[in-house]
Length: 154
Image 1 (cartoon, rainbow, N blue to C red):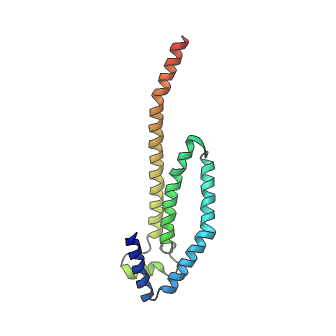
Image 2: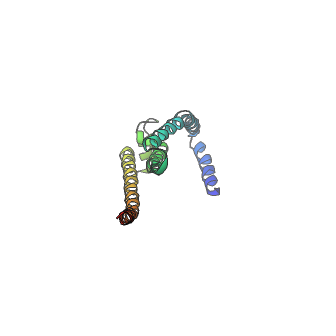
Image 3: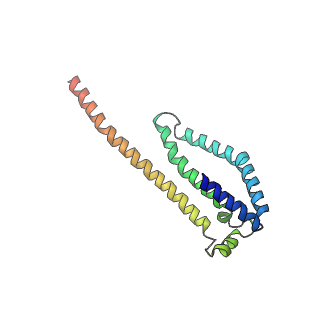
C-alpha cells in the first residue's frame, strides 16, 4: 500500500509540472461520474443477465465466474487504456503516445480485442476442463450405483 501511495504521490507531482493537471482533474471527475452513474448500473444489469442465463442457483451458479472474470479483466483494460483503444479521444492520443514513448500507438484496439478473445477462450477452456473432470469423477459413481441397483433387484 505504501508503494501505491508513493507512486500516486509521484504522479501527483509530475502531472501538474507537465501542464496536464486540467486533463487529470477532468479525467478523475469524468471517471467518477461515468463509473458511478453509468457503468456500475450497466455491469450490475449485465451480471444479473448472466446469472439468470446460467441458471443462477444450484450447480450452475459457479459457471458465472467463467463469464465474470474475463469480462471484468477486459473491462478493466478498456477502462485504463480507453483513449488509446478508441484512437481519437483527446485529439490524437495515439500520436502523443508515439511521440512520448517511441512505440506504435495505433495497435491498441487490435491488441485489446486479441487479449479479450484470449481471456474468453482461456475461460471457456478452463470451464470445459472442469466440466469434464466433474463428469469423470461422477461417472464411476453412477456406474457403481447402477450395478448395485441391478444386483439388488435381480
